[in-house]
Length: 435
Image: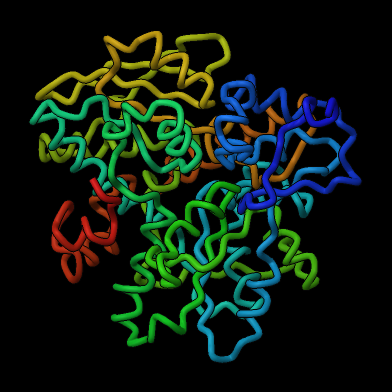
C-alpha cells in the first residue's frame, strides 16, 4: 500500500515505540529521518527479514513526527503500580542528559540543571532511593578505559568502538557484523547501574534484591529494549525493571501535580549517589571519548591528564564527525567521534583500511541530549536547545570538584569492597557482556 511506503513500518512487537494510527498524516518525515540520518529505512529488504522491520529503537522518528503519531511505549503504569506496592522498594536512577532537559517542560531554560529538584519530586512520588547514573557512567569509564589499555598494549581488536549507545550497538551488529568484536564488551551505564543496585547495593543495605524495583530515567527510547534483553528465563539479569524517558517522567510529575519550580532541592542517596564530571559528559557526543581517555591517560602514566589534552576537529560542516590525535605521552592515538548511524556507516566504509584506534558513536543528534525520549521541538529550534543542553552538561563538569572517574570516592569504595579491580572476574561477570 502506498501509505505504508511513505512511513516507517513499526512492528507490534516493538518494545520501544508504537504508532497511534488516527494521528498519522502519512507525511513521510519518519521515513526521511530513518533513511537519511539513521541509515535504516531503505537499507534492508523487508521480505528477507520475514516482514520484521529492522529498528534500532533510537526514537528519532518520534522526534520527527509533528502529529504525535509515533510515541514511546509508556511504562508509567508499571512504575505507578510498584510505587503503590508497600512490599516493593522503588529505586530511581537519573541519566546525565535528563537533568538539563526536564526543566524545559516546566518553563525553565534548556540546560538548567534540575537534578536536585528531580530527587525531591521522586521522593514525593514514593521513591525509597534516588541515584545518579553518572555513577554507572564512572564504572563504564573504569572498565572501558582498562579494556582499551589492554587492547592498545596487545594491538588487538582495534579500533575499539564504544558500546554505551544501544542503538549504535544494534546497528553495528545488524549492518556490520564483521566488526562486532571491535565493540567494547562493557555494558552501558544504565545496565551497570542496574547490576550493582541488585548486587552491591542490596548486599550493603541488607535488602532482598527481589523486593527492589529499579527504574532508569533516560533520554533514550532504545534503553527500553536494551534493559528488557536482560530478562532471561524470567529472571532480570541486568537489574533494571522499568525505563522512563524524560518526557514520561515529566508526564508522571504533571499527573501527580508536581511542579519542579515549586519544590526544594534534595541530594542523591549515598553509595551509588554521585558520579564525576567525566560521568556527566556522557550525555553529549564526544563526552564518552573524553571521559574515557582521561582515565586511559592516568592508567598509562599514573598522572592526571592536562586539561587541554583532548582536542578534536570537525571533519565536515555538520559537526557529526570529529577526529583528533591524542597525546597519551607513551603513545599518540587517533580517535573519531560520530553521531548518526548513517554517518558512522559512511565513515567506517570510507576509512576501512585506516580507522582510528578508538571510535565513539552515538545514534542521536549530538548524543543523548538529542535522544528520542527528550522533549520535542520544531526543527528550527532544536539545534539551539541541544546546544544549551550540552552547555549545561559541560558547565557541571567544569565546576565539579572531581572530574575523573578514578578519583570518585564511591567508585573507589565499590572496587575496594566488591569488584576488586577493573576487569576482575566479578567485574567481567556483572559489568561486561560476553566477549
